[in-house]
Length: 279
Image (cartoon, helix red, strand yellow):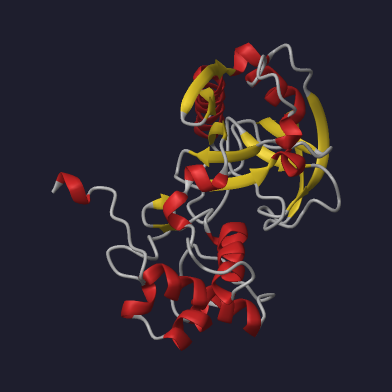
């Protein structure tokens, strides 16, 4: 056998093994459904076989191109995961958590929109096309949106390697990220709304929130080690300072940035260290 043919056969064999192992790992991976911190059930992909899968092609803003997925309608997945809850899912608040710490609070009304799916297979690339700055597999559970008007990552986030879906009020899940005592409609409260909508996916305040980026209040507030003007400029265009994972926010207005800084300023005086009592 010619060396080229032998190499090709060996490569094909390795790809088959990789795809087989990826399939086994996907089948074994579990998705946890929780309510107020208590697990209701944990399911493997095989447990979701009763949910009819669909194959469709739609634009994916992370890949910046159309992708074809085998996917489960999210509503049906939630109805199975939270079976017996006895309350309409649209009326609940949800928190979605990925394996890397990416944390997404979403209302039930948003999460149960038509067009929300859990992708379980990449039809274009058998073992999933790598995604994100770290070039990781987004499987085995990747939240995707099918609709043409559901492509904004701020309004329709797409956590990959999804691990947990929890029903929990935001204030109960992240109580120390709330600027308690600030007047409704104040700049700090409006900045809190922006942080809740756009920042908590990756960042924590007082150790509550996402774990992809640094905590912005502990041990020091970001305003205690960076000038406010630099904070504003960094949020707007982080790549002007350094290469990293943080996205730019070109649509944030000066008023948005003023309010976000007002929120950071308010939280600077509301530090809460969860582990302080253990030291």
